[in-house]
Length: 161
Figure 1 (cartoon, rainbow, N blue to C red):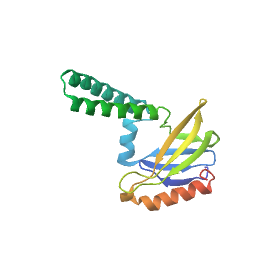
Figure 2 (tube, rainbow, N blue to C red; figure 1 turned 90 degrees about the vertical axis):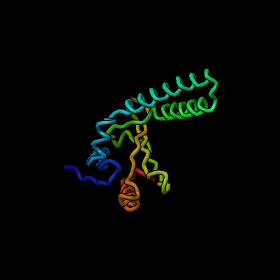
Figure 3 (cartoon, one colour; figure 1 turned 45 degrees about the vertical axis):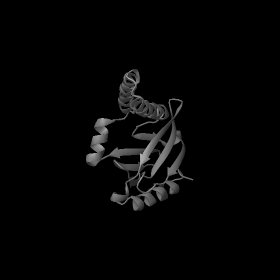
Figure 4 (cartoon, helix red, strand yellow; figure 1 turned 135 degrees about the vertical axis):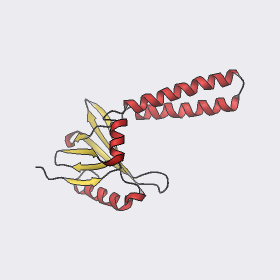
């Protein structure tokens, strides 16, 4: 068996193997993520697109009834959703990333009360540069300790500079 280093993620564990990164989902959160998202980012993006279309339709209806406040609200939220879809098109939910395909890894520290710490792994898949987000545990689940451990592990493996 290959020697691996393991650190906790939001939904399970990340195994840093000599030839690849493997993300496993465990526990209730991991099982829910597996059922909702699977290994493709398409399902959530389609749902966001449907919600955006519904909001745009309602914005048009509100505009025709001269309810401009609601029109601006619905249009603003739908534009925000469409922007999110556009910026997420090259994201990936793949559970395995070969190390030879990895171009760079960026660490994004947590902003307490706002965001979780995460790694952005940029890799090539079928000639296209994709981004895999690896979210680390939050502050209620030993987040700072696990984050320090994960950062040190990624640095020692030469993935994070």
